Length: 283
View 1 (tube, rainbow, N blue to C red):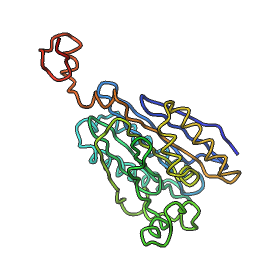
View 2: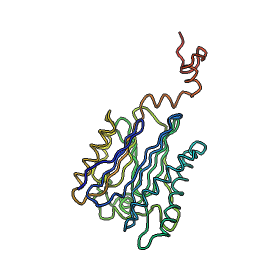
View 3: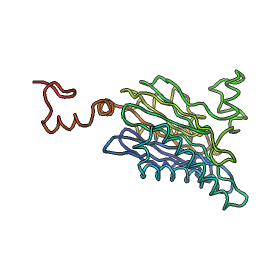
């Protein structure tokens, strides 16, 4: 059982992954940040497909996210449209990748969060999840595209029991299949004290919603991320799944920057703002 954690971080976010009890790592993630606008893109993918295809699939999804971010499409497009484009481009890339493989089919889940200005928007396909918390209280989470989630919707299964259900790993949607994926979207206004958790099924199957909410409130997000992954790996045991997690928190500074127009902030710094302008204290 491998408990080594590969980690990365950007302002107000920490991410990591571990192999757990699996011989290979099929989870992949990325945290991207634009310092000029304080925009952030967080993406997590869980690959599948056999014979190494899962590793290739999740890596391809993350590479697509990096490419589109670097091309700057997120600057011009509405957030949901950018995330839709990301998912569809990743799907098309997996279809092309599959044409060159024999005996393996690259498929992947994806969950992505874009925080820009005063709003956060997210998209997902599969059973990798996004949770949204306010001071540790769960405001909602994405619904898995799985047979187990369908059973929950029908009242046949309790939501907290999904991780142990025999149909949990039967996915109804994913990237890389014969048809373009139907992407699920969500959005919210950002507020101080709000936090987001993105994770693969290897994490949410082992940690409760309450645990994730408490960990997301920790002052030190990097330490909280390590603790969460350590717990998931330990509880998964020698046959445990790969685990991956991204913690994001909205602090007062980020919230204030999103509300005050950049020109006013710069004017206040330069001393050229007129008394009475928003964000400038009058003597």
